[in-house]
Image (cartoon, rainbow, N blue to C red; front, side):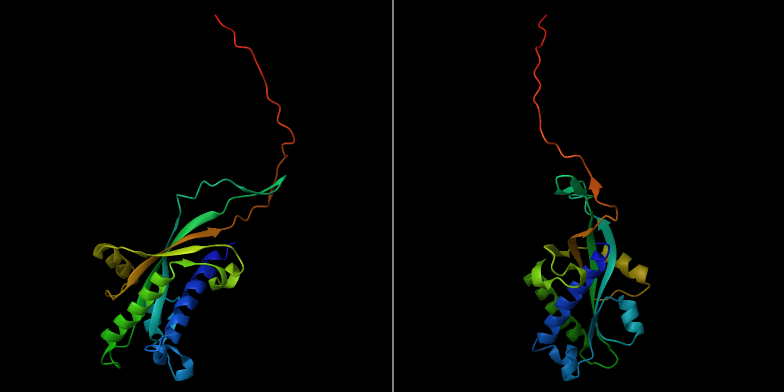
Length: 205
């Protein structure tokens, strides 16, 4: 499906948001029922700050095709019908806790607390499937792997340079494999009814 990117992002956002709301030490910040105003959003860190909000930015900053599964053959759904293969993708998210340092004296400590909780959530749930899948992925048999990506200081600095923002505490996650279904019609093929072996005699010289 062409909406797989959106559905994957919504799934990860809600998984993290729910965990923060249910955390007994962070619920006062993230649970609206307790007056919490912090959010988990897909906006960039820059956009979150511009909106004068606090919380977590889970920003999809890079998309690339998955070379390991790119050449999988088409899937046969009937003897005379095959589905064109999807485009398999790896998604890269920058996870950034944002706390207003001007109004919260212990902002650095709170940012590290929130980041620690996010790391715990995705470490405990490295594979997202079944009832955890939301939006257009709900009810599918897809399994999404979430892996903490090791980035050098130079690599992550380039990401912040692209945002035109000073570096902030952040981590990157690689999520795979998310398939974008082909928009082509199902291909009609002629099924093979009978295979007849052929024999020959080799000429010996």
